[in-house]
Image (cartoon, rainbow, N blue to C red; front, side, top):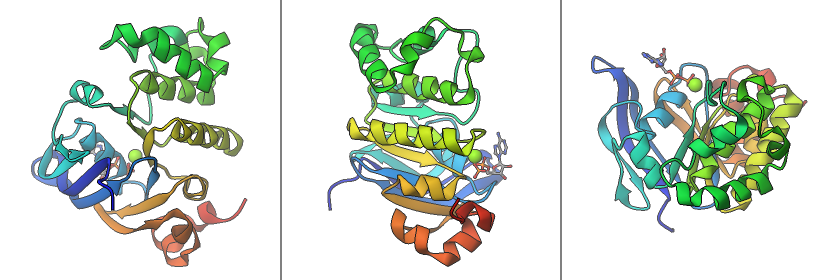
Length: 244
Ligand SMILES: Nc1ncnc2c1ncn2[C@@H]1O[C@H](COP(=O)(O)OP(=O)(O)O)[C@@H](O)[C@H]1O
Ligand SMILES: [Mg+2]
């Protein structure tokens, strides 16, 4: 078994010391995978990726990146470790142009701006002609592309994305998922949180199902898709799993 890109061991974390939200979560992400974290609202999915991203305090357990301990590193330190995080909402600077949003992704490393910009625009050609527009003027799907594009400007090896399809029509959600597959094909490993279980698992290698701050089930995406217990118990409404 190769060493995971990201390895989380038994982490406990929360917003206040008296109320732990994550109660001993472990998870591995291997190079080149798309791994999706599923589970009902309030399960702790966002808290988990915020804890990895240095935005929620970890009280015990470890986060390692390619074997190095990165537990508790701040978000800007993680960028140097080539870990990027796209929050679920407010993930673009609405008043800044698309180009300015992208440029923020290489603020820590401006000499890389031109080459990374080219890479991101090759991946998302639609951003090129939107470049001068304020990000706040864009559609939800376009904004998501800007948010992911900005994260990719930092040339991450691990991209973490919280509910990239939230608020999008099923059709646009498919577009965003197809874009994440393209991102994976450029060699970026992806850890994603999603409510849209079936569509997310269809592009994932593996999935983890969380409930009440713990990991309940994990496995190959195909096996989770076929597991009726998983569908009924942990993926929210059954209709989410229904074929559309
Ligand atoms: N900023 C916050 N301060 C305090 N509690 C929070 C905060 N954000 C989320 N929580 C609580 O943490 C729990 C898990 O939330 P979250 O990780 O957002 O769940 P999910 O992303 O799975 O829907 C919930 O009980 C939620 O109320
Ligand atoms: Mg969430």
